[in-house]
Length: 125
Image 1 (cartoon, helix red, strand yellow):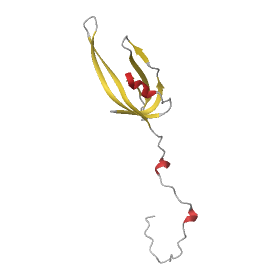
Image 2 (cartoon, rainbow, N blue to C red):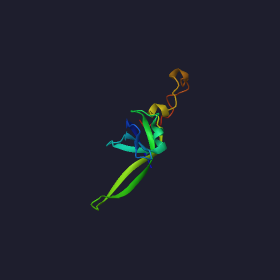
Image 3 (cartoon, helix red, strand yellow):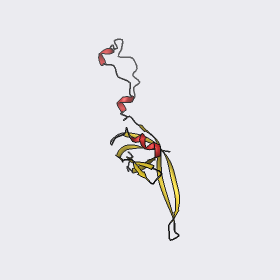
Image 4 (cartoon, rainbow, N blue to C red):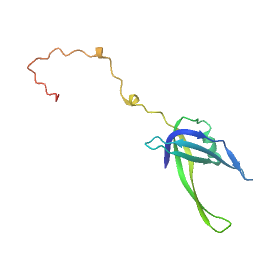
């Protein structure tokens, strides 16, 4: 799965526990009718993937959904979900003009000189 959007926030790397578990969060705002602020976490060696990204950049993040079960001291079972990133890449802002071939200037065309009034004009307007 993937998430695309503009980076809203890149967090600092956090280290937890005696084994040095590392986590870093990024928030991406989707660009759709109802934009969503999606928090994605990168863990362990993947935290370094975020070093070259900044707020405002458009990115595509490949993600995995993770879920886990936890039983609290009172015996109640709780469930938690997380979105874990494993790859990120910058997207180029697409403009409609970028996909259009260049139009030559008007003086590059020769005027049509062999038109006759009696030639049929089949244009619909």
